[in-house]
Image 1: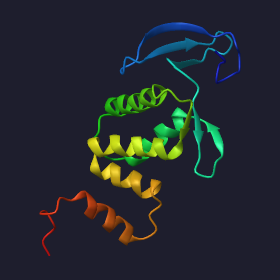
Image 2 (image 1 turned 90 degrees about the vertical axis):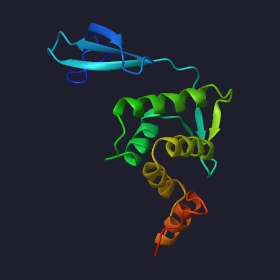
Image 3 (image 1 turned 135 degrees about the horizontal axis):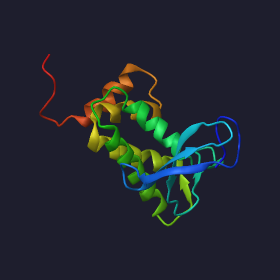
Length: 156
């Protein structure tokens, strides 16, 4: 593993243990050239996934991109970081176990929205606002009104 500080390719593993989510290994590393210490994570990857964008463009699936978008939606929400990691790992496992290597971005977005809806409705609406490209306040109002049961309209 290359040292992120000096670029040395000969680093040493000092400690290995399962990460909190138990689906990855956390390794503490040491660089003998510069003395730097850093952490890496190792995960199982069942298959290489390719995302098919709505315009037909293809790009490699990026777990970090998925994680960033979910963390933005969950920003300042009372959700435990470990729960977020488990959710992201669950989504990735679900995508990998679908049997297909090419996955439409729309399908990934629907899976994320379904998962967020079960965890936090505010994060669900935040993610949906970007995913569904809301343009005006009316878009929010319409979306939120679809979430409410028929009998629980707010008092005016």
